[in-house]
Image (cartoon, rainbow, N blue to C red; front, side):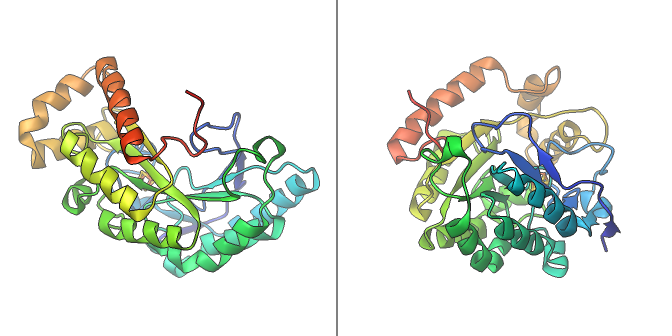
Length: 299
Ligand code: SF4
């Protein structure tokens, strides 16, 4: 059973809007994340190896958000709220606590634009509220002519292979179900796409797997696919680098040496790799007609 906590703040104003995720604000209803992705950037000693054990529910989040958005709306400071940046808004606990649903009601009340980011099919429970947010959201002035919708829905994938995902994202909804929900979103005319982050070297970044994924996203009707390579941190037992290296040793021992070469002395993939991946993904984006940004950048 997750712990119930009282948060001090809930609406985080970003320093600068990220060009990929368009976040002016972020909201995280939970502290920690029970989806337990091994590569997750929030990993570390604070949440431990089994992040579900440290999960906390920010019980007062709707009241805090109501207060914060009332103030921002009064000043006309509209901007995309990303829900969520450091947890998933549709964890297993959300079925019981309905905290994300309560936050959506507040966001709708103040008509803020919203970017949902999830690895879960539970988002379909809230399609009714999301429809209303989409039709009522007020975009910030500088995005009025550029942003495709006041509601964006992004599904995160590191692979479309359910077995591979089970190793690296043990608590999340399997990719096959995520794809069905993505397709449902598009059938409802939501502006929805994919964050293909992180691609797993020699596992989900192979030519064959990339084509399989792009085909699946195109078939589902995705409007964009935003790719990125793997980044790993830390040398302690609960850190992403240690957890991913352990999983490689256990499930893909033939890749251990390659992963050691990549990550023993650094946190990011080498430049030759990121440049080659960038080039490949641009080719695939053109081939499958799937832009790599929500708001495509001029060439
Ligand atoms: S769903 Fe996102 S926040 Fe949760 S563990 Fe996975 S990467 Fe981290």
